[in-house]
Image 1 (cartoon, rainbow, N blue to C red):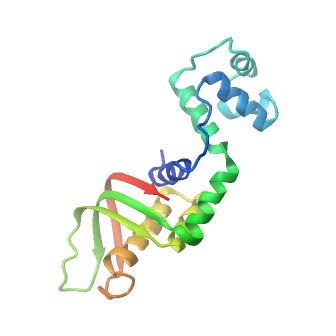
Image 2 (cartoon, rainbow, N blue to C red; image 1 turned 180 degrees about the horizontal axis):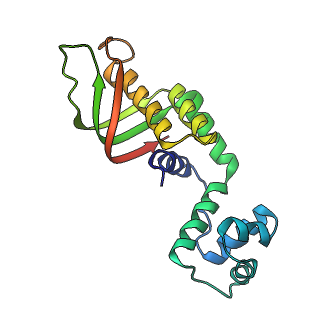
Length: 185
């Protein structure tokens, strides 16, 4: 599970105008339609083509837990692509993104200042340029570590340095021991 990637996906999913299919049969039919056949769906979900066909015909109604999770994740990944794109575009150009996190934060600063890591709960509105960087990195398949670094840099700039008005000597902010992380568009 990728904490930052899943958090960004959850924020975008709140923009959906219609709920994604709930039943296994409806989800399977949606994926078959999207991928244009039962064979690619079977390969993607790592199940047999015959099993996919049974779900499509509602002969099987209740998937195993691991399959149910994969099925839901794949459907949500493809659900309402235009609305997903609009939400990302708006966040990246005008709206920005809000990060709500409870994590241990520390920073690298000059000698004589307190750079002790401590647990903080922050809710910070990040400007569109950071939303754009987060979404671009996510789309090119960036690791959770890279997304965390972008978020830490954004928090350094917006929260700790107040967009250049204070703590000018601050060099790096570290996010560790993340207990809670949520994004809002």
